[in-house]
Image (cartoon, rainbow, N blue to C red; front, top):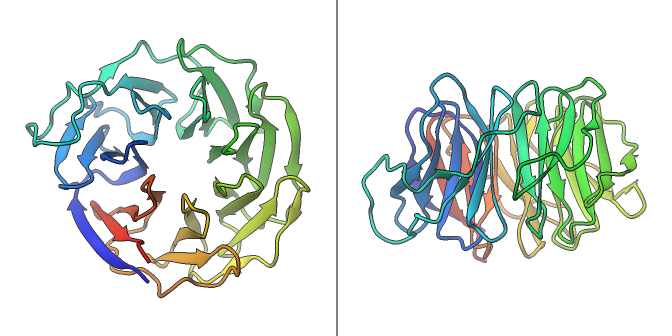
Length: 316
């Protein structure tokens, strides 16, 4: 079903997260070398990076729905939001350019340990963050001030956050539990009562908003949930070898979803049948900790620990 589109060598930065700009012209990679880099989707050229912070690691990255801001999460618990107004998708600015990133203000006080995941509300007025301190937090995008009290705080690290496409729900993980909150107020609306055998590290909403995928250290499987009923949908999805599924992402059209596991493979699954959609996408040089589909759905970005981002063509 798929063929490699391009391998982009990003160096020895050990990528932790990847996100496409809403317009699709570039994508951002958060690296454990203390930088967040922008790459042109069409050319594969580096077109910008954040100022380096060699004392810390960049663990999370998310674009604002309008594309003018990019939020970054760091190993010291900081959240830094940059304006990307200076970025031009075409052309070849000098490698290492930092003027594409303009800090919007001082990082807010909040997480006491590393920020593991970030997600903007679909309307852009709120930013959600997950941290190793076991909390999920909501922030006002314009001021980076807290939007209420921390969510969670049960002691287990929080590894993932995701808003539903309509913004009504916020899903987050803490330990073996997937929790749900009101996406506007942060009020708890329950949790998904699954029998996850280990910590859940990844969650993703289907574009229709009713289906949620969750995966992690959970017997090498992905569980699908109906968030309106709190019930599992079908049997768990199995196919990877190893103990851990690192990432899960839905295609923008919802017809399939992608997973990355300990076996260094990326797999595509048909959402309707929950069966493999083609052969595994192999050829990795390290584990893939994050996946992102292009907004148009024709590309899947998979950065690996070997310092390569592979852009797979998902056009049928």
